[in-house]
Length: 206
Figure 1 (cartoon, rainbow, N blue to C red):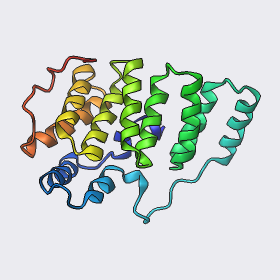
Figure 2 (tube, rainbow, N blue to C red):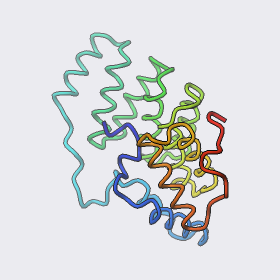
Figure 3 (cartoon, rainbow, N blue to C red):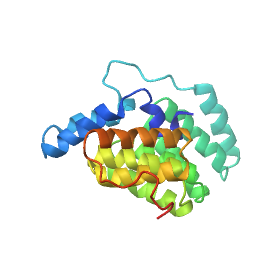
């Protein structure tokens, strides 16, 4: 599903080029902050593409399930996924929030909620939600990956983003998240902005 990670929303894009934008914004201080947001959140679109259609039948079926069992966290998170995939992030937030209320130990749902916050321009709220996810699971690679992306593109904080991505590589270097994090780290290094830490030296969960 698309909500698994921001990295899949930016798949095919060059981390080096995007990080170049971030670095340029850092060097220029307050110049053109909207450029970074546009580069970092492509799923919000530029008006050139229509969002994917909402699966109305799936929504109806899941809503029926949830209405008959209001404590069904699984149905709530699936509704969040359907709305997320249709790029209806406010609706996705509603259902992800309901899911984590019912099942506060679900790190995946918590992180999907954080991603949805970011796509609606709520950067600080996204980072706070990722922190909650990491309290649930201190080795949750999907959370670290997305935390790094939001820190880089939402906060222009490359040092903290690099630390988050190093965690991903240390925890799961061969995973899709690990490979994406490695590309991001290589982009920072190529631009000459690496903090110099060894990619695999981060302590998981620290």
